[in-house]
Image (cartoon, rainbow, N blue to C red; front, side):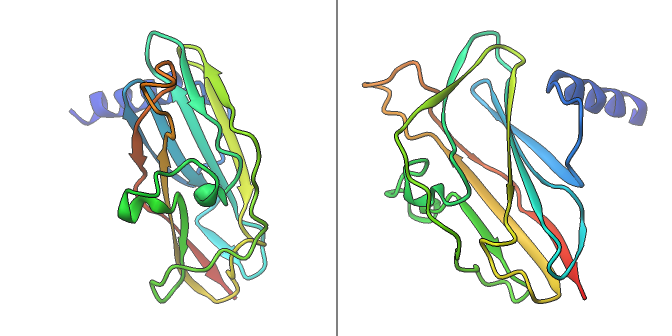
Length: 176
């Protein structure tokens, strides 16, 4: 039984088209043909060390998908979230060692709305350093919480993927 599960996980990784791995820890969600994963490059960091986060979108369907562009980790203010969804009004959050959401201290990026075209089995990766955008100077365990929300209005843009993917928390530790 365990061998079959391992083989299925290996096949899922190959289907995602990953040739390199940033992920120290990652899981993948799928909804309506779009798989989404979030990972950090390591589990443990020294205070001040750059912390890289990778977001990956994979078209696991048999048709082309149009995906709203995620510009950066400040997108909670610029269109990838539905602000009427209560707790889903923030797309990217970091929680500190005390369990409280850390304020975003980076530059908020705005720009024209656009989208990616993903063919079947094609993926798109975005990598970000969050070291300058959040105060990560205290030793302890941190959590990253990401929700990818399409801003598509199906009656206006029926070809754009529409949905909500709430990724499980990604955890990392900072040591002195």
